[in-house]
Image (cartoon, rainbow, N blue to C red; front, side):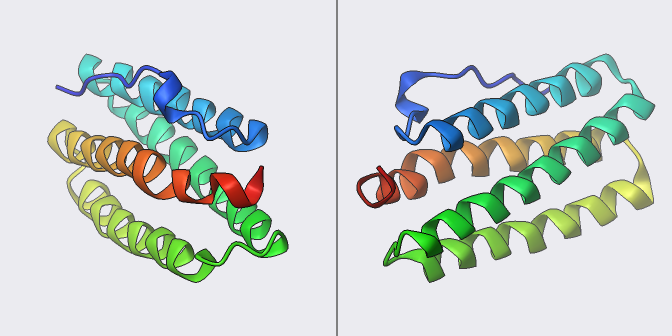
Length: 131
């Protein structure tokens, strides 16, 4: 069973656009949680796809912003995004092959753990540059 992620002030970077995108990621993740916990297979796939699509849009925006504003850790930040993307694709393949609630839970848990860690530990490093 997955647990929802509630937005807290600790997740606030101070970059309004990024914070709004992070809130949207949480919202989409929480919709996935509802579908997984209810065992709704069709909705699970829909929400996984929606969440993944928005994650990639967010990465594109964030990376462009970091590059444009000359963030000195841009390359390592992008590398973290790439590692996440590769791992997510592997989990997605497992889900596509199995289509089970357990596989969807693994994807959800991976996203939740990575997202909260990434915002709190990695995104906070660019605050001074992007503000």
